[in-house]
Image (cartoon, rainbow over all chains, first blue to last red; front, side):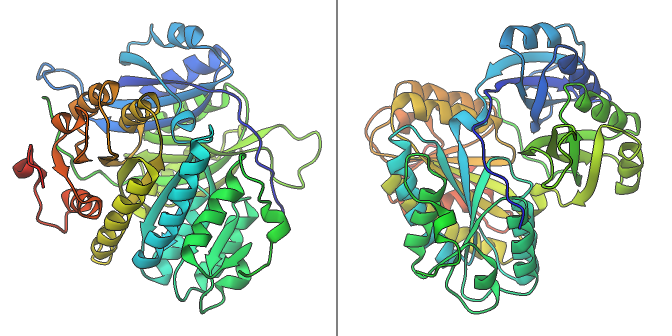
Amino acid sequence: MPRRVAQPLPSAIAARLEVVDDPRALGAIATAVGEVGGRIRALDTVRRGGVAGAAPDAPETVEVELEVESVDEHALVAALQPLREILALKLTRPLGKVFGKRVIVVGGGAQVAQVALGAVTEADRHNLRGERISVDTIPLVGEDNIAFAVRAVADLQRARMLVLAGSIMGGDISRAADELRAVGVPIIALNMAGSLPDHVDLVVSDPVQAGTMAVMAVADTATFDLAKQRGRKY
Amino acid sequence: MPRRVAQPLPSAIAARLEVVDDPRALGAIATAVGEVGGRIRALDTVRRGGVAGAAPDAPETVEVELEVESVDEHALVAALQPLREILALKLTRPLGKVFGKRVIVVGGGAQVAQVALGAVTEADRHNLRGERISVDTIPLVGEDNIAFAVRAVADLQRARMLVLAGSIMGGDISRAADELRAVGVPIIALNMAGSLPDHVDLVVSDPVQAGTMAVMAVADTATFDLAKQRGRKY
């Protein structure tokens, strides 16, 4: 299975923009950033609707969080300030510096909560030493819903590990697990019925330990190498 | 304090692109999407480096997840396919349909884990009835780190509620809480020492109940109106 090794990321800069909600606005912004050599890494609409108190005939606006690499803050502001599509601009902090790597937990509520207990507790210990690890969870039921979520982890920024917490998973969830691992996101599963345990990197029976190991595997401050554990069951 | 009411969002379409990692590539993509009337709502770099097995002289590429409104999938694909910056294109599912609204929990590990227990368990009950609510957490220590995280919640897509879980918070965290509420993200805090409880929408002593109420407040399938609870302590 092809694997990609996670590399430390170059440092990004970030800004929050209030932008006129016109289909052509982001083309103008992305072009201006590219012209000064900036590489846009993220551009997320975080709010819609103009600021409170705006004139009734003011244009519809959206607030957009922008993250850019290969350019400094001064050059970014200089490139964006002249654009008439941008009504306000404020420098912010790139999300990776605040929320860091993400461990994603998906499955049944009772088990997701126990995995989260282990993962949050372990992340606390590493974040105290300078790491930044978040634990992001969603309780879901049903093969389709869980398979969609597994595939969508490939579309999440900064997702570094998936934990599947349930009592029976297989079928399309196992296919989705293979696809996710193929793009380089490892998976830990609870020991459970169904074919899923044959399609993950590591199987752990205790949910608290599964969460703990998931965080250890992504922490630079831990000495736990998932590659050496691959295929094992605990 | 100015408040914005959350509206149901128009439906988005999504695609994952493999893009040549050139500063001008995203300008070309955003312009092409805008020309067919599409509004880009998100554009996130989810992976770097070309596909495994690519020729050694192949250009550096990144994988980008794109979400667009006001256009259908056929028109989006037709607009993007001719661009030489795009090496591969695959339709995906918008993240809002998979992971939905986000309740964010920030604070001390022991308490974050207990809030998560309540929130995940409650989200399970609503997600079973067709809601989509995620519970995203990060354990952090220190006034600066927590204040940065509170401010950064304003930059997170789909963040609908923040729970601050700790034993003493105030100072710059309270100022950050005021700023976050001013952009429309409500805050529930545990009952704790420090000034923070005077700067939030609701104070709840039991962390499991705090997590439960946070999810109830954002669920369309619940009848819990935070506006009616504002300023109370439980």
